[in-house]
Image 1 (spheres, rainbow, N blue to C red):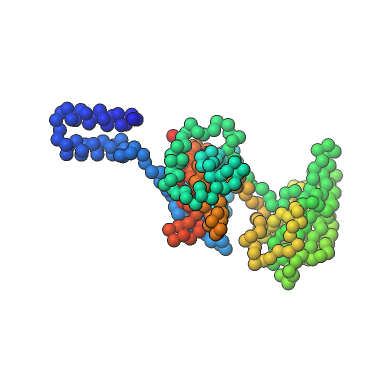
Image 2: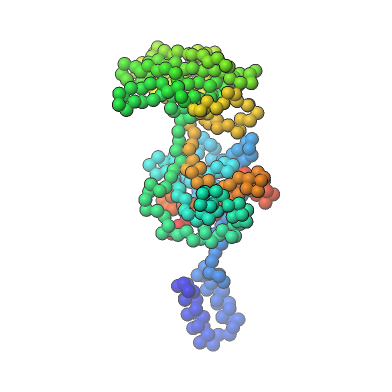
Amino acid sequence: MNNKSLVLTSLLATLALTACDSDTIEEIEADIKDELNLNDDETTEATIYGPYSTGSVSEPSFVYFDLETMSEVSLTKEQAKTDTQWDLAFSRSDVYLNNADSEMPVSVYFTDKNSDFFDADGNAIADKFLNATPESELEDFTAVMLSDVPTDSEMFKSDETKSIIADFYAYNVTTHQVSADPSHAYIVNSDDTFSKFKASALTTSTSGYGIAAITLTYSNQTSADTAFAATETDLVVDAAAACAGFDGVYVDFELGQVVSASDAWDISLPCNEAKTEASFEINIAEDSTAMQDFDDSFPEIDPAAMRYYDFEENQYTVRAFDETPWTQYGLNGGHTLWSQYGVYIIKTATASYKLQLTSYYNAENVSGNISFRAEALK
């Protein structure tokens, strides 16, 4: 019996001794329970938030959620990149953590609750997923307490923002020399053309801190093609000359040449402040996307199946939640996503919260509708 129940029992015993009638005692008991936040079984069902629509397969959208106020935050995707009010974001079944505050990014720790949904080999136990409900898994959520928050900060993971084109060169830690890394190929989707390219040669500048020249080996798949050109083309870029007086080096693969910033370019290399050399950085245009093809697995791209490829914007997010996914797919042979009902601890700059994702569907069984439990740990 907890302290609140002891208080209630003591008060009722006192009322009985003072000879109050039963109706009066029941009324006073109800008032005391309300005041002490008690109910008959001394438990309260955690609030389920949602469903929040996260868009369709063809048009995914973002929902931003603030754990402090337990409410949705209305933001555009661009605003959300620098806004620090939201903690969690959902897009289709993906979960994002706010890392706008680089000093104190939102982070996640996955507890061992519901670990019995998997066997010793890490395989999903279908019956566990198929038979689980928000009601049957409530106990695991309520069982997580503030004392379960790890003291080791390294046990928490945050989302990371990375550049889609980041490994086109290699650095030798012994000789301190930089060279091209042709094993890392990239596919850029820009201006109705897919261009697969890699850096096949690279010359560093005299300072050693920039690129004087770079050879880009590429092949195109235009809107009239069904695959990348069988023959690759080398484009030698004199980065030092292209930087003279300019902020960047701009390349159009369809034309196969260096162009100006005002042209329809595909990739760019920023120039240093002195405009004498290019930086060790390659960016794609704002209206373009790109994907990595390090295994040379894609001899062609099917434009009708774009949503199934891993094309990303210039800056993309590596999601911490992807290390411990909250769903399993197709366990009954269909195309349904099933929740594990795992319990996550979310740490913000000011507090810790527990989170349990309960569904990916609304009452009409439409996908892309996220529901979850969330509660501050005190």
